[in-house]
Image (cartoon, rainbow, N blue to C red; front, side):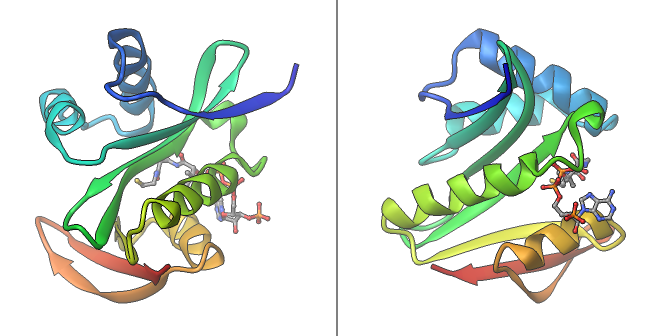
Length: 146
Ligand SMILES: CC(C)(COP(=O)(O)OP(=O)(O)OC[C@H]1O[C@@H](n2cnc3c(N)ncnc32)[C@H](O)[C@@H]1OP(=O)(O)O)[C@@H](O)C(=O)NCCC(=O)NCCS
């Protein structure tokens, strides 16, 4: 069987959160799991798109609303064994379609400047670099009008 894509029903089930956290800890070793679950439980208009191999989540894209018009594409990743097969591109496409259909006017995302893979993918998906936010490291802000 190939890869299947779907949107996660909200609220996310405990099992799904566990799978997302497991994959996130592989992709982002310094991830703060309590902040991760805090956002999943509390941020408005949460959405999650996943790619599964059989029942296992091998890629995901999560986001939430910042205002009634602005949506934030928060976190995403693809398991190393499944990278460079177009999964992230597919997930982002589905996310943007849904965000637009929900009536948001702008989608934004942020990126640590050295993440060139994600930068390329953002630009190929219609985002343009729109500024820098100075956190512990400078983070590039990308924006796409929908
Ligand atoms: C960034 C990431 C999500 C890309 O996932 P992916 O499924 O491999 O991406 P795709 O196959 O859809 O690639 C789309 C394009 O992105 C660019 N890209 C992806 N991975 C790349 C890499 N390692 N190096 C350079 N460019 C890359 C390429 O332009 C690629 O197109 P191509 O394969 O036709 O050249 C994945 O590498 C990842 O999970 N990285 C770790 C987590 C992360 O950085 N997440 C983003 C921050 S929230």
